[in-house]
Image (tube, rainbow, N blue to C red; front, top):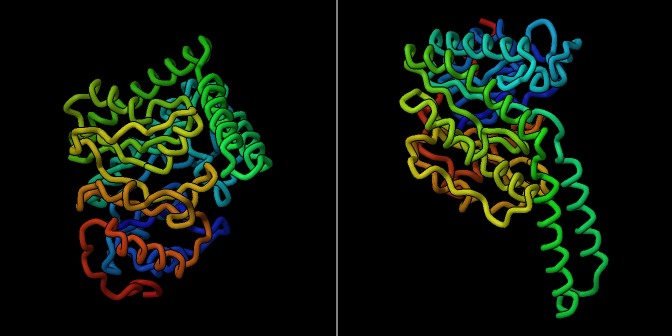
Length: 351
């Protein structure tokens, strides 16, 4: 079923009624509640969404720290209304106080999910520990593209051969840029250990509540929530309610940054896959579905009909754009199982 992430809500503060209208006017039946919704607003939003005949399909975690944004172990004053997703503590933080804040937030999200009868909590990827080579990779890709743009007609065999050499040279340079040195490997191992410590009590509680925890695929270099890293985590927590939610656009972006020619396939055991995020890719920037160059049908048609499909759109996307994107999903057959019929969109507002 298609579900709309609250990520599209504009950065300017909205009243509850405005939030509900913004989310439901796009006519997507499911809603995924993320960092844009403050904790004390969640119960009222669930009531409005369900009362409108729609469904809250998942809750994202961790949520922003209630008093201050935590980044790299440093507390700073929050800019919640502007960048709530940047104010979320990391489950894989090397700073123990930040990791514990994220763990508490995840455990709280599980209790909220149980209270509102939600089946899943989604974990967003943590930022990698230490130096992030993404900026250097993007600069190298841009420089290579400039050389290609300045070259003669690609129909010229000599030019075509030169372009091939530039592209292969770029791949090798990207692999070198993203290859972790010893210090980076040590930080990544500590980050991985921190994530394991955070997940252990959360998965135990999730099992007691009958809720699944789904790790979101990362587009960041050096995290453990890419496709190969997830398989390792799944084996460590064998039997726990740990799932994985794919982000094909993120996987493609990460492969480009790392100089890889292909993207790792989805896990063979599809019972491990909770669903996917629907996004597109343009010039290695993640954009709204349909605004990029991904082959959408090949990327998203291989998921099961009952898998969750989360539409994550840029902040401020209009309702009309949401409806057009949903129509595109239906036309491509990537919208999944038919949703329940929604009722009166706004029966509770003002009541």
